[in-house]
Amino acid sequence: LTRRERGRPTIGDIVAAIDDSGDVVAIRGAGSEDEPGYWFGGRLRVETYDAAARTWTRRLTRSYPDGGIDPKGIDVTGGRFSAALVEARSTGKLDGRDSRVVVLTGRPGNPRSWTSPRWGHQVVTATAAITGDGVGAASWQAVGSGRTARSRFATWTQGRARPSVHGL
Image (cartoon, rainbow, N blue to C red; front, side, top):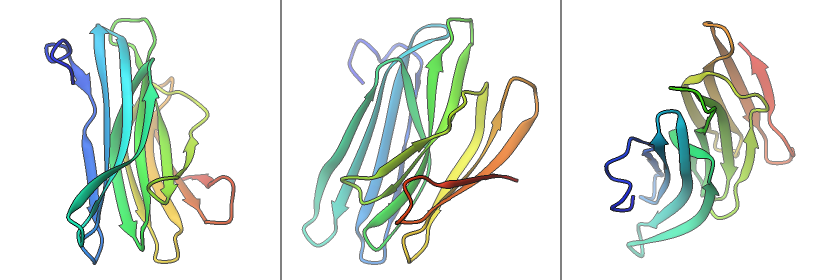
């Protein structure tokens, strides 16, 4: 965050996973609140650590200027990863942030991305995993327009353009 943004509320965090060889994939997300309910400056970064070379490399950077990114879960195996993120946006209302799930899977430098088509009031929790064969999986609970959280589960095989998403 910049010096100017430090005094403002922020969303975002970092999640990381380490594989058996000691290599790491880390996902950083951020966003700032200009006024209550108005989020901006969202960013997503995917970085890797090569244990043999002892070096960090930024693999991917994306901007989300009208909201923020909050990474929730990640798993890595065989140089591939799967991650679940929460994208937030402003609604213009006091405490009026909407959110939805973003799933990333694949190689850190060029992951496939899927975003849930509907915005909801709040994503309560999200997590991700990947199998040894490279099948990415993510699950989450989100509150829509009512007060009930609904659970969803997605699997994404390497040969498919989009994940299969199911309600639980």
